[in-house]
Length: 353
Ligand code: PBG
Image (tube, rainbow, N blue to C red; front, side, top):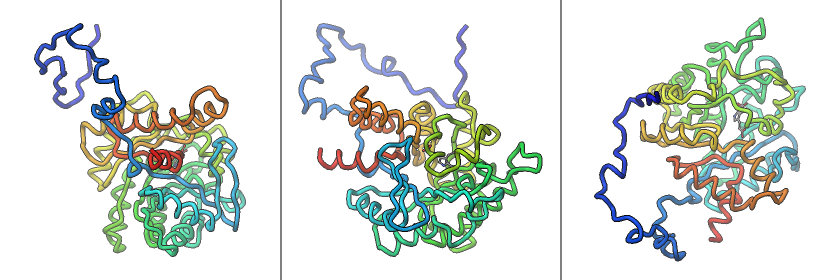
């Protein structure tokens, strides 16, 4: 027997239950509304706009460096000078927010991710460079240790090397968040999945005079194979090796658990929540949106980008159309916005119509 699990909310009435019985074919012809371009535009339920886009960028030490990321064609790691240039161009297009991710040289990593709490680190310098250039754009920064640790995990490893220490990690994340806010970051975005980190970061931000700094929590972040290319980009793939993040990131089989994660992050003070990855988890985006009605974002992660881009380059799909369709799908699922490596390209297409 197929017993549906209760979702804990009143079920939305089905259209078929509320609408008067509609006459069927041939009186009703669904294709009538689809016949012309103007009519299709008129009846379109969801649209994608430039305001929906958040652009993740990869920054590294050095000057005048543009390093292509092999598994993400079209995406580069940039030194701060180029970051400023490209962020300015993205802001000119109307992209509201950029998200900064660091690549750290292997010899600067250690087991506790010390560089993450160094005020002179490349994330803080990138924030300051964007601020100094007076670019009118929101700056978002990841809070997590994986780009900085020699073992590639998001937190501090226990002595046995088989678990990530929660509360000790939260202490470091709080320091990382304060540094980024001090440097001028607008949105702190904890991506580590430690318990209690949102509340700890909120309290620390407030006590350091950063009451206006927003928090976008990676609330429902799954232990996913789709992060592979990102780990190449930030250089954590070789550190992590075959180790898994399953003791802190969510199990891909779970949906109800995502709602608990979101509820906790909201109770701890998150201003916005995120579901990640995106496309395989659109059901979660929809459920979060319906249950909580708070600003909800989806991350179209590196592996999703690589699939669409790679197939487009190979000529197996129309890459541009697949890009736009995938982004619109997030809106239809209920997302208020999307973190996507396609942000600049999508914005250009939206601008040019
Ligand atoms: C770091 C972090 C990851 C991503 C964003 N922040 C990787 C991970 O958790 O292993 C993935 C982004 C992407 O794949 O595009 N905690």
